[in-house]
Length: 261
Ligand SMILES: Nc1ncnc2c1ncn2[C@@H]1O[C@H](COP(=O)(O)OP(=O)(O)OP(=O)(O)O)[C@@H](O)[C@H]1O
Image (cartoon, rainbow, N blue to C red; front, side, top):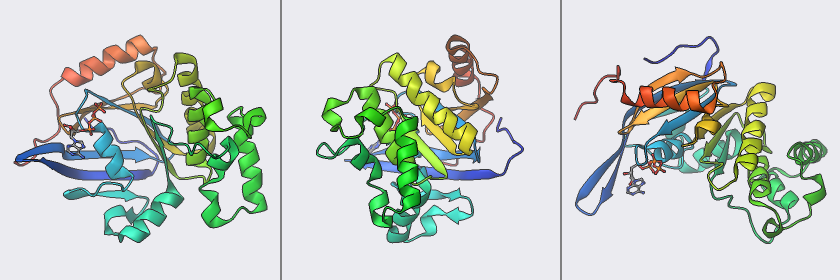
């Protein structure tokens, strides 16, 4: 059952279909996937391997064009934009964080974070924001270090800071804690959580880990390329309780319509 919430939706994913061709075979990665996320909401997307979570994130980010369906961020229909305008929109409004930190090895932590600001020019306000961010992620004493000399957790915090330095409306994080130990993973979750709480940014995190999903307001469960179920998690479940609810949602019969073949 899809939930309706009070706040205005920031993101609307409407009936997305995405097929990939592999030789003679066709893979239905997304089959009528729909999702609505409010401004300031923190959503965790869970589901078995291959159910379409990453493909959905790529579509929401405007990196993969769907075969059909729409993605609206605010009033903007992403795929009605030309490639050039879509890239510009993504840079301005969407922050992306992946499991691989994708930092530039020859640039310091600070320079990596500041990269998205280069196109816009580094104004005084931006300098201030940069300093504030570096302090918030606890890397003030490490700002001049190259990525190689930072721990995995520190590198991921740099990657998150880079994703949010332009203050995007929505942050998409695909397994952001996948390569981190649990302390560093929890620190990354805390950072994303504060962003949703204090700055009303919309956060969508793909994760297999109940201890990560436990930070979310709502858990969305995907199966076979669709949103199978979702449940409210704003009461802050313990990871074990969340895992049990996830399993129950995954195996419950879906109330969503079967897509046309
Ligand atoms: N570029 C591609 N070309 C062909 N098939 C693809 C491509 N990208 C994804 N797929 C297939 O689409 C399906 C969904 O993949 P996706 O990566 O979205 O799943 P996932 O839920 O993120 O999986 P995991 O949890 O293992 O990362 C899978 O069967 C995958 O093999």
